[in-house]
Image (tube, rainbow, N blue to C red; front, side, top):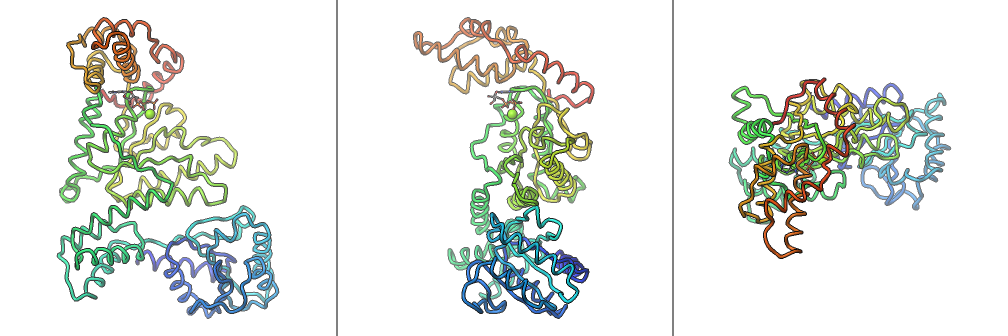
Length: 499
Ligand SMILES: Nc1ncnc2c1ncn2[C@@H]1O[C@H](COP(=O)(O)OP(=O)(O)OP(=O)(O)O)[C@@H](O)[C@H]1O
Ligand SMILES: [Mg+2]
């Protein structure tokens, strides 16, 4: 059974069991209308529709039936009407309900009427691009999301489009385009096909670039995911050789995914990098995207939190769908322990966090798309144990303070980055910097170069660097107690070392 058929059956079951209000989230009103039309026919319902632009309209041709009336007044009429076998459709629901107490109160009254008045048979169906359910209505409303077209459906749309112009498309181009279109709505796909056709009079593999541009636009407009453009070179990560080798292996798989899958290799899910502050976790995340040659999307869980019931979850779903849409990609969740704060305590916001977290875990488990999740965290004791269980992530790595040879490497990277090739005794610097993090080392190099410039505009020397080192208090010293605590926890959990 397809997604759409499943959804239809599920909604139908709710209608037959007299659920008073259903909420359909979709970017495609046309699709929602098709669904409602079929439901109305199969259940012998009359349709009343209200939309924000025109008020009460005829469902089929969308012409206004009466002079414009806002939703509050329309609800007042519905409350007074005899409702026998009706669908009451409310379009643009999130805009019409938001910050509108009278509408909320009348919707509540309408739900009561539907539930308790034996002569009333009606179902309210909200249609909107976003979920927005005020807490007062939560117990009356059931939320449904209309699925985006799957690969078979996309394939059919492209084929139909090409045939319409008596043209044909090569199988490889068809497959590439189908992959590229995933995550877009049918409407968006058709629009892009028209644009591709206008450009050169045919649909072919070259149109994939167009699709990717469009997806970048969609991400920027969404405001729920960041696309990070300036990424780090993989070679600029010092030390962490185990982690880097592991990542290179995954890169090989990702770059030849179909071949690897056919061979029996499992698609990489992702990696969690935990450990000491300033030691290269975020840096590795950025460098991984450039190693994989994939777009880097950053998910900020805090920014997904909304104040309406279902809003945060809906944002989370949208964010993950978007990531799937641009896949293959790297999805970076930075500071994971802060992302799902409050898990385990009892306030409402933490309930939401717990639900979001559960949703994220399920998604990680079930995801089939090439979205490589890269999570970074300091304080893993704040993370729920479910997350650390093997199977969620392919691997969990622990990043410790760099050892001597790693520090040498990191000094070299940061000096080179700033065009300092003079012969500096890196070994000596490494010896003097026990307990320094990568960030501490970077700070030393920066300061030495600035001092050298300000003093005589000569390159920094081993001595000038050592001078600064001896005046530096590394983080390990400043955060002594916290660091000790981390160290013990990591040891307890037996997490694989990144170096
Ligand atoms: N292993 C490393 N190699 C090269 N540079 C490093 C390394 N570790 C840290 N640095 C430097 O320090 C900066 C800060 O590191 P980064 O942001 O990756 O730390 P982090 O582990 O994410 O710390 P936090 O836990 O505070 O988020 C980096 O931008 C980089 O310049
Ligand atoms: Mg970081």
